[in-house]
View 1 (cartoon, rainbow, N blue to C red):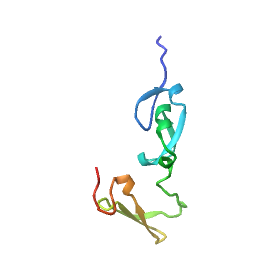
View 2 (cartoon, rainbow, N blue to C red):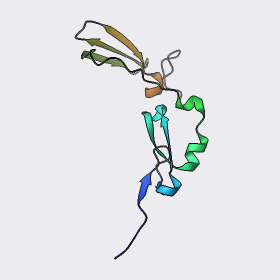
View 3 (cartoon, rainbow, N blue to C red):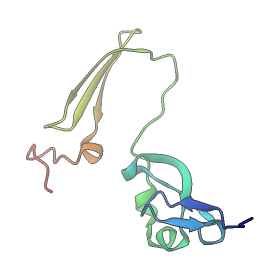
View 4 (spheres, helix red, strand yellow):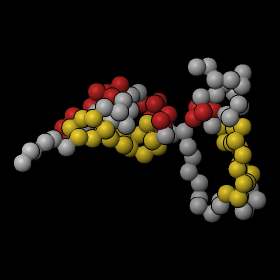
Length: 106
C-alpha cells in the first residue's frame, strides 16, 4: 500500500501542491474567481490588494435574463431581464479588450 500526499491545484499558477504548501485562499477576479479559492503560498504572497477587487457585481436574483448580447470587440455585454431592465456590463477586463481603442493589447 502506497501512502501519498494529497495534492491540490493552485488556481493562479496551476501547479499541483500539497495542502501544507497551499494553506491560503484568495479571490482572484481577473481569472474569474470572485470568491476565495485555494492558492499556493507563493502565489498568494504575489497578489496585491487591488488584484482582489471584484470585477463582478452581484444583483438580486429577480433579474431573470431573457436576452443577452456580447460585443467582444468593445468589451461590452448587454442583458435584458424579464423585468424589462436593460443593463450594460463592462467586460473589457474579462475579454482582454481596451475600450478606448477597441482591440486587445496582447
